[in-house]
Length: 114
Image (cartoon, rainbow, N blue to C red):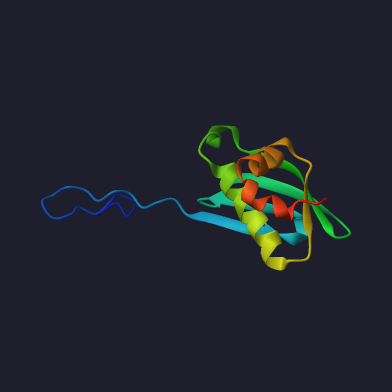
């Protein structure tokens, strides 16, 4: 019986590369957070609070085993894009990581609360 998780052989007998892990970015407004899941496992989180016309990103967390792979930056970009698309809020970077992200992306600074 064949192992369903093994990569399929390609022409010439070589095995095809394994499929990329399922990668899911989401906004969870009920939990006031943005999440990144890889293969259904919570990998990174950006927490926020809403204060009038501003959204404060209060904490960014990446699972220790997943740090250094760019997941936090990807999730912050997703969250910033989402806030920008909604057009209702300015952003207050309360978390050091989000503040540094804006330092690396000066073209997005117009979204910051003044």
